[in-house]
Amino acid sequence: MALYTWLVGALAGFAMTDVISGIQGVLSDITSEFSIANIGSIIAIVLGAVVGLFLFWWGVRWVVRKISAAFTKGKMSV
Image (tube, rainbow, N blue to C red):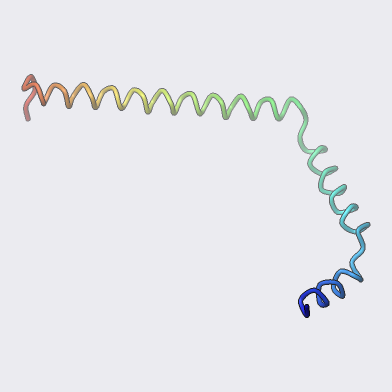
């Protein structure tokens, strides 16, 4: 009950207009910095990087499997 009383007392002096103006300020800063073209280019760069990393990962796994299969079958030795 004491926590509830403290919370009500703390929020009594808290104005929601401050929160709303703060959120509006942050949103206006974000929208002034980023445009649709910027967001599209960021998405394209990230997507290209993800595809490149996936292909690299797949290629490394393929090579490791081929080499380990060659060692297992005795076609390759150290």
